[in-house]
Length: 68
Image (cartoon, rainbow, N blue to C red; front, top):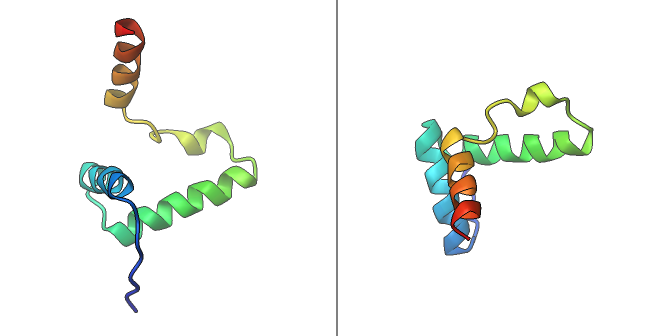
């Protein structure tokens, strides 16, 4: 059954980028994010975090620090 939720534009844009990058549906993406969040509460091991941050995002963070 489908449900309608309301989110901010900036959150939608971030979700949309993740969705496209990983070729997922919004439902699958939101499910993964919820599972990840719930897993963090249970003290998830480091192996489960593999691939959570895209390498392109890491480079962007470094560039921001250098340019500041």
